[in-house]
Amino acid sequence: MDRASTASLANHLGISHNVSRPDQWHKYYPIAKGRHQSPIEINNKEVHYDRSLLPWFASYDPGAAKTILNNGKTCRVVFDDSFDRSVLRGGPLPGVYRLRQLHFHWGSSDDHGSEHVVNGVRYAGELHLLHWNPKYSNYLDAVRRADGIAVLAIFLQVSRSMKCLFGKEAPFPNFDPSILFPKSHDYWTYHGSFTTPPCEECITWIILRDPIIVSSDQMAKLRSLSKNAENEPNLPLVDNWRPTQPRYFRMVSASFL
Ligand SMILES: [Zn+2]
Image (cartoon, rainbow, N blue to C red; front, side, top):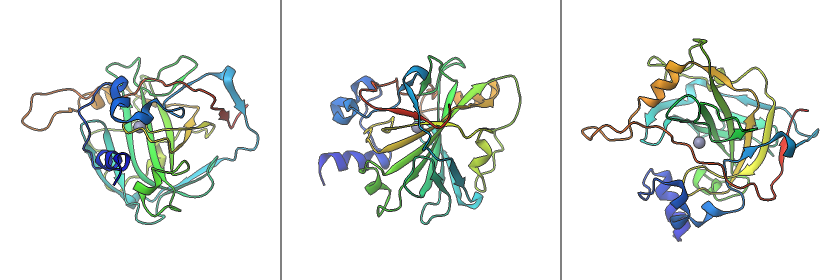
């Protein structure tokens, strides 16, 4: 196995080098300084409306939800992806992509925490629904391909509204993530990477324009997670977002005018 696949395997097994600072990642994973890195800042001035972009559709099977876990880096819900059970299609995608997991990025306070930044705005958090292209034999194969992964990204905006999206009693298993979608399916899309090492450049990003509304209490619950193991001193899990990366010559397209 070459170094890159060893690193990739280690990452996906949850074993990674003790590199917590994003500006050091490239020392272990050179692609982290590549030309197709994520997240990026999205500026209306630089976005192109693409009238050929289709609407996207998600058909998720609530029974596919398996477990929820805090892996020390994020809060993650894992889905059964052994067949085309919960899928995303349409939009910029060439075919059907299988839902594998969803997870969140958040800050240490409500005024930051999203990875993508829109016209200078940082949201309190960002939800990522990660899908892989089943034309490849498995997930680890897909992460090595330019069209291997599709991430649907949804911003979390804090308001006083108490619409309950996450909480202690969230039902896992038996959870349909499409309840988290905002009303509008308008999106931006571009080609980028994972925002965690090794930062493989295999992702078609579909970033929804409209955020979903969460309460400050709900964000506080995410911040109350710990990144330490049991019986270790408490370290709050906060600021698990990567700073924006250069866009270089990439085009960001919008499905809306
Ligand atoms: Zn993510």
